[in-house]
Length: 534
Image (cartoon, rainbow, N blue to C red; front, side):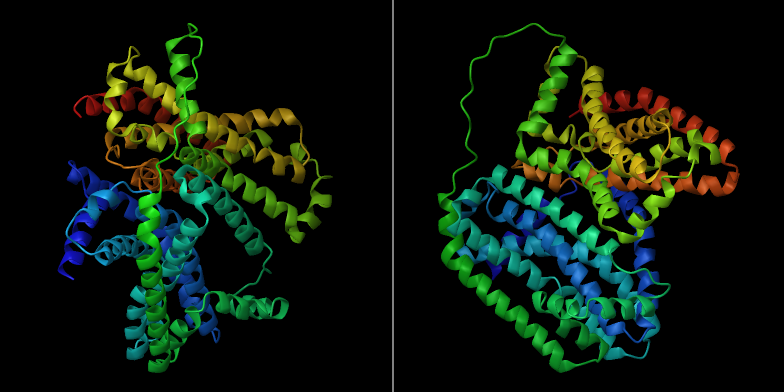
């Protein structure tokens, strides 16, 4: 047990180290925590309505199901990266510790990582439960216990499935292939969840929504609780204050732990020792052609993104999730389809000032979609320990920064342009109005990528063992997303201050141009000064 704690402490330190610039890392974490506040408030207000309704048990089961789905999605990448694609396993095996200590320490690191995500969703629900059930001491106590128990079954199930897949399906033993396939499946899964969510009936309150849900899909709740077998006993232990259901939940966790232990003991270590590193393709001799240094650098950066399955799935494919989800939702949603026949005959260009509306739409949508790719947010982190390369090549750092940001801007614009497809499908208006959309989208995409590359330039994640850690375990990407959404929220708040669409568009455009110009001057200087000190 002592070896387990020592290994866990060491792996936790490697995974969650603040690095050399602790103050900067703490400030970045605080900024990200502030960005979570609107999401937490939304969870809290929705939970208040849920616990005040007669369907509180079903509502809590639904919350636990969504948390379990989040843990499943997160742990698929996390478990494989930590257990199989990490380079520390050979180093750990030579230590005088048991194999169980190695497996247990790695699992503990995954558990802590997933617990962080689970608490973001469950803590506001717990606060709402305390407020609506202040005298239910057992329920509150069991809820606190479930904060730590609820994520164990899905995490253990993913661990068991990953061990079995890696042992009996060697095809997935290649980390690039594994991440690419799982990344594509995750996108399909996300699209499916969004389509199902938008197919749900509209309701004015929680009670009406649940009533309509049961009337249309009475068999779905039973199926979901069968798949997520720990959810029912967990929710009932809280709502009813039941020791029996808590014991059932503990028994489920214990059984999962035993199965995971047996699989890890018999299948994990032999498999991970026999796994070969990612195969390297033989380089073919190519004819060298003269070209512009900036163009060559841009093409080289683009090839690195496209050729690496990890970067391709996490940086490029992720930028198309939201537009694809929106198109899929519009296609399958019957309410929207019924509106199409009416909206297509409406002369919107005569009724509204489309130049203003499309400019604002392009700017707003690009704040969402443009911040999802993580290309600029990992521009320097992807260099890893080879960061000195950017310092010594015969191309100025300012041009390198422009090339890296340019790739992020290009893919952000492509994902934003996809939104024009459903817009033209729903509304009939002349194509030349799209120029206003392009102008707003371009300003937002440039600003977002400037912010992203500034964050990564000032706080690059350089110590990683594989490419997955460079993008998946990189908090700079999350910082980019939430800072972009925070800026969008401030622009939305600005509208309620001005309350005049024309003046608001002019002010918003001036602010966007000013921010872009300011960061265009300051960001390269700040990045260069910082990177030269590393």
